[in-house]
Image (cartoon, rainbow, N blue to C red; front, side, top):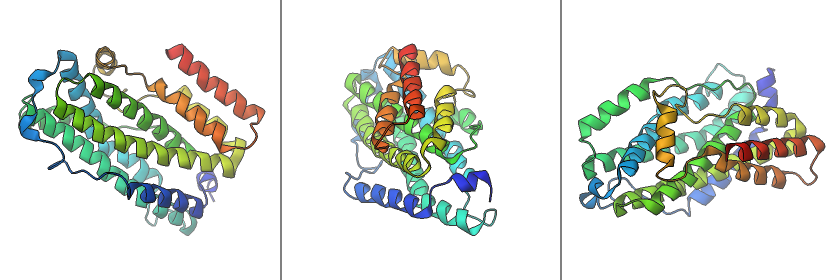
Length: 282
């Protein structure tokens, strides 16, 4: 058995987390790109230059879903490349990841639709703008399964927070509706990732603390290393609505605190480290 396989959650724990996600999703307000918004009323002319730039930026990030999703299908395969024990775990996780991918793909479609419907760009120009970044490979140097969920926990929460803050200043009500749907989905995705990270702490204890620390120490949002001008663009959209992925760190700290009955010294050190990263970034 590989060290990776030995470190995954028991299949039943993963199945329970997936089941809780679907139970919550069953009560969520459903929406469809084609009918949820009055696309005829979309008007990019009501946006500031910064808001227009933010829409273009988040469309690229959401549209990179194939590359992002590949991280999970490649590292948690559901085929003959893994033994039966790991396959059972991965198959339970796949129930979530395929639904997650479908919901994230709806985000990409909604933002692309907004661009064309609002007059920001025509449909072909949107597709062409997304092609280059979409072909870039996104990879993460993780060797412990908990890292994929800790990373997504931060990424989903950071995205949710940004969408909420952009919605608060958006000049076009249709864009505000789009961002409302996206932020609600991201909140549910965060809840799943938090549930799984908490389960890892309960099952594996302090053994998962160093892998989580490594995620925070090297954290970068999707496309940060491959999208030309990413950091300059990120700073520009932060002038429109606060954008700082470390805003999500306080939520990770809450997950860590709630996951265990008694905090070990090593867990306390990790929480202090995450808090220091947030303070420095702020």
